[in-house]
Amino acid sequence: MCISSSSITVKENERWHSDGIVYPKPSWLGEELLSKLARWAVENRKSEFKSTLSLVSVLRYSKMYQELKEKYRDMVKVWPEVTDPEKFVYEDVAIATYLLILWEEERVERGVTTKQSFVDLGCGNGLLVHILSNEGHPGRGIDVRRRKIWDMYGPQTQLEEGSITPSDKTLFPDVDWLIGNHSDELTPWIPVIAAR
Image (cartoon, rainbow, N blue to C red; front, side):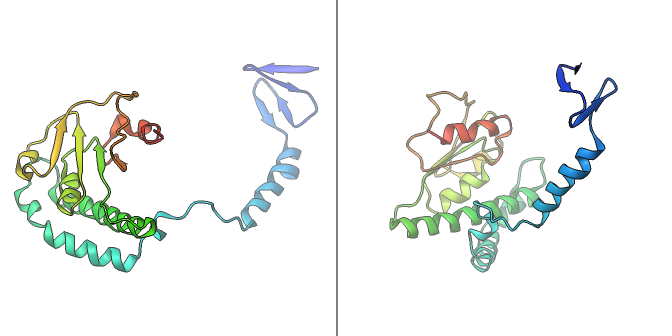
């Protein structure tokens, strides 16, 4: 005999019981689920993915972060946006530090000297684009709304006001890296665009 509840069909006297709602039987919970959870908890499975914190040297990161923090500290004093300048400036300095070290190691690994190019989809205030560009990486940022601070960066920081509709016309084949620093609604599309 089959019991159907909420479009789920379960055979009676197996792993589940129902009083209008389908529940796992206590025997299944104890005999199967609990033993699997216990086994999974003690398994020594190595992840295929490296922790992002292990991709760069903490010592190199700390040193470069302090250098860049000092170099871009005046941005906090002249921040024209209503957002918290310390949060945004030092957060973007931290992200830039990570990327700069990661990219340097990538160049060494590949045996190239040309600095990686990038596009920041949803660049927001554009500070990350500004820092990466000032550090020698060709790139640009695109955001749906222009920010007041954009005018302060100068012509070497390429920022564009515009929307991005994911399609075959927005694959950015001419850049090495896609960044989504403040990508918001575009975030789920970045891996799709990056798969170009």
